[in-house]
Image (cartoon, rainbow, N blue to C red; front, side, top):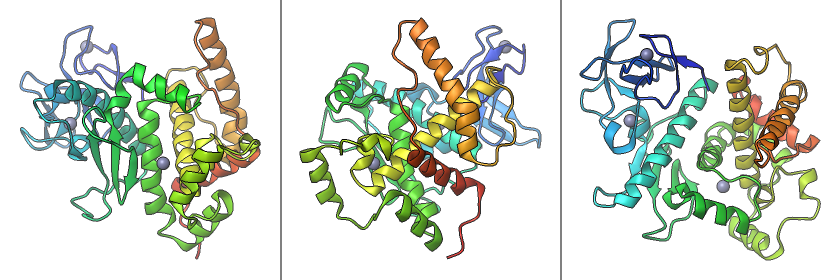
Length: 332
Ligand SMILES: [Zn+2]
Ligand SMILES: [Zn+2]
Ligand SMILES: [Zn+2]
């Protein structure tokens, strides 16, 4: 995540800040330049081209800090949310705040990576949208279908999420992780299955995605992951079906990329040297940093920040995800 500073007093501020804690200036996020900028008393900002921006209408509802061109309108991030808790649902709305925060983080990172986001307005059948629902009220299955990502707001509750994590024997479970995984399904449709060469390569790496999805889920929940899963997969969940393997790998790529980016921005590691493959990034940058961060966490009596082991087969999968943004589609 990019390092930000207050445009008025120069103090360090964060992506999530709606105000500078040093000088009290109101702040907002301008997606076009990926910068936190000062806004005037009416919540307005004029960019370098002279265009006027306004704070998103959801500032009080969801804590959204983004700017929008339309006075009284919603920003790009809020516009992607198709369903949210109703105004009478106080608990749902408080969970909605946490979910929207994770979603804005995801979107800022996708922008930073240059991953294309097509809205539902642009593509009503396959554009990206979010249904943020709570399993406190109805049965909610976290998932992705034709561009629509469903998120269970109950997962914003730390106790609930931790219970699920233990029950499913997962080393890592966060809201940001859910968003990264689900958007991985979206990008597999958009960037992989749209191209024959990439689809072929994906099948070599992740397996045959035409396998019956429900049958594979049933198998996973009755038999569990194969004993040697960690030689080929990043998580037990990834063993379920090639779709899930891709989504887990995509999410994992975002975990590593964002953490490296943040570490560079805050001077923990040198600025990005040219690496000719993601394998080199992992070996030269990521493994030393993640080992150090694990020790830092242990020094604070916390669990490891990075509770994963990367096998050669998993690094090949991350290399494929890396290639989706750095190379043109393979010839089909
Ligand atoms: Zn300031
Ligand atoms: Zn907004
Ligand atoms: Zn999934």
